[in-house]
Length: 155
Image (tube, rainbow, N blue to C red; front, top):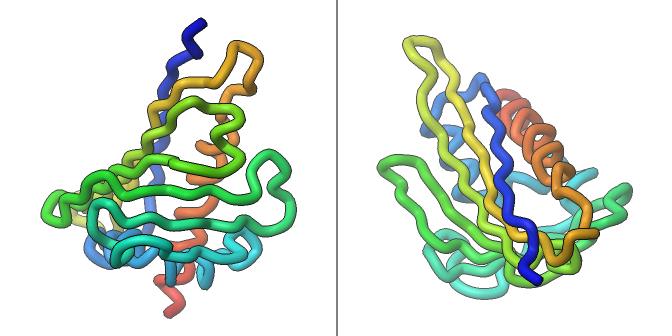
């Protein structure tokens, strides 16, 4: 029986300009644990340079994340000019619930104002009909990006 296929999307407005926020996304193994140490216990680059397609990261989440404690992700594609990154989950507890997961992040300038729009989305296939909807992933993204923005603005 095939799993349930779905998509989640979120749009987050940040105060940092698009280039600054994009650079944080590209250096997330360093920036995200500093910006949100309660969420990110550690992020290790286990393959590649951490920026190029094929690079693999293992993220260990902090206390309070019961469903998923570790996740291993691979960068699938990057377009620095358009500020778009595509990644997939290749290992970890998330794959107990999802047969496949592909995430997309883009950062675009917000009109004439300083600031930018971070668009996050994911496509997934649930491992079974009984698996919970992965809405917690969307909540995670919408909570973390503002923390990264605050960190960048205070740095």
